[in-house]
Image (cartoon, rainbow, N blue to C red; front, side, top):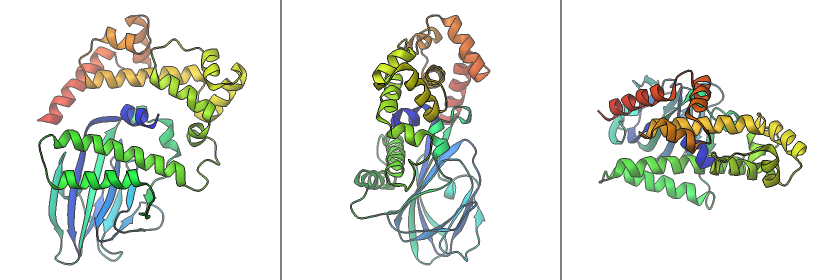
Length: 313
């Protein structure tokens, strides 16, 4: 289910960079609305300076995820002034390895990654996330996350054929492991209502998996309740309480999000997209899509195509 959420939200090509910093150094990353980013320390140490809250000390193997596109600072010490970055750290492109940022002192190596999201389609699960997620390295903890970090660092350090595709997949994988690790280990994360509880609830989770795996199916509340192993009324009440939407409202929301992703990423005809997400007629799909996105699906697809072409130039 988490993989579905990541795929639904991400648009365009991700940006990544392996950066070697030499003390003294400090960079201020400006806010980037509609984006999510992470930093990983491969060598040395540094400080993360969030827009609010206390500075966070980072050491080798630490992972930081910033899901809401807020600005932040990164520096070798708390006393180093920050230099405003003009976008990505050291002007990293879609895939880059940069060296020599900062002075001539002690060396710190980080891996940076970010990708754009669709603000209007931000999944509710992200509402449960704090401004900064810090996953310190711990021997034996989150081996999949550590393996993904190592693979990503190596892939960016030595660019080889197919690297863009590999890095994109690794960035998706890294975010999944970050989210999984945070939900599994954060104290109290499941003590509050919301998506953290929905994921932890076996009944609701089964219903969500059903919707995500087959959005084209003509799901009814009764059928989803059967998947969940609950009465119809009990399921509808619990689903709405945890997810924040009634079951069929969420089904519609998810179908249209999947449709938007298909339109952005392919030249599949609108009629076929409509069928793939469970609409019996193209007319009904067009109306539903326009209500949700404020634009007809055909026009949405053409605009996305132009944006994709511009990104590749």
